[in-house]
Length: 250
Ligand code: G2H
Image 1 (cartoon, helix red, strand yellow):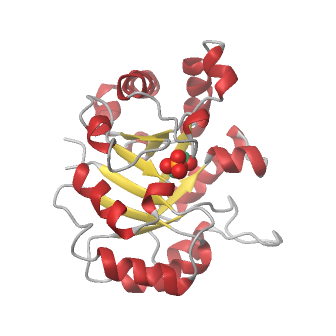
Image 2 (image 1 turned 30 degrees about the vertical axis):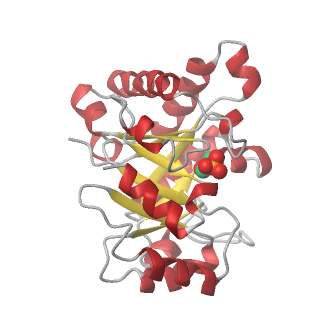
């Protein structure tokens, strides 16, 4: 009922030629019926990538946006600018942005609204730090972040949000959450959406797992009842590995 979604988060990797070569290599391969495939690339790559994926089912996303449409915000990029390029998705509130760039639950929510104003699909990241997990606060942290992200969204907007549950201690560390643990938290996030809206809304919201996902473990995550895909960093940077991830999400 929910279409699985694999999103590669390239973070601050790849020049334009590297990015377009990658698309040439995955064309026709990282295109599996019934799986949505999204590459979230640095801003500089986006125009070339939108062009490179024309005629394929691969979608392009950004990794951030500013919450205003335009204005005196040196160095920032707005949703209006992304839409103008032909971008479809945007990652919002990744833990690296929360940690290094002072992103807060409030700015995440403003950015989610900015995404919808510009007809972009937000991939909203939530997840706990290691000390929060060890203190038994995983669900509480996810609740606060999820409720803040969805604040003020109408039901039809809420159904389109993609949530990425990324326990911070599992990001880029090689330590992944077990599929069962990730599923338990993701099922909990779904109950939060039921409380905020209703069951039919919660049943269509796609919730990904993220944190050291690779071709070797993607099928285990995808086999869980509530996990609808993966947000993948390191393992999305090589064409063969990315293709295997999309195939593994079938
Ligand atoms: C988490 C993830 C991508 P990685 O940041 O969002 O990265 O797969 O390298 O842990």
